[in-house]
Amino acid sequence: MKRILVAEDNDSNYMLMQYILKNRFEFFRAKNGVEAVEKALSENPDLILMDIKMPLMDGLEATRQIKAQKPDMPIIALTANAFDSDRQMAMDAGCNDFLSKPVNAEKCIKAMQELLEA
Image (cartoon, rainbow, N blue to C red):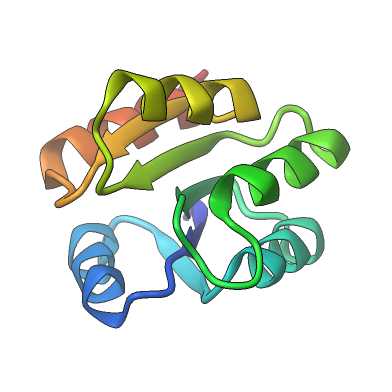
């Protein structure tokens, strides 16, 4: 079963991700960007769902740090900001895809499967 790191500081958003991922993936959580980098490097997930606005270090900087050491790590940005500029900043930081919140379960699973199969 594929292992997913969910970098999400908000409990209700994490509960939604649990609902989407359960029975499909093994998953674990990071509550801030610093923890996301640490777990991405130590736990070696198959994919990361990265919230952009998090404490200690935002998801863009966490993505940059992860990609510097693991350039092939698939990362999907999750953000409440759905402007084209936000999408561009996420892609420039190294994210492979971008989903706006609230996350649509079907779109999320489809995006994850495409990256995991690539």
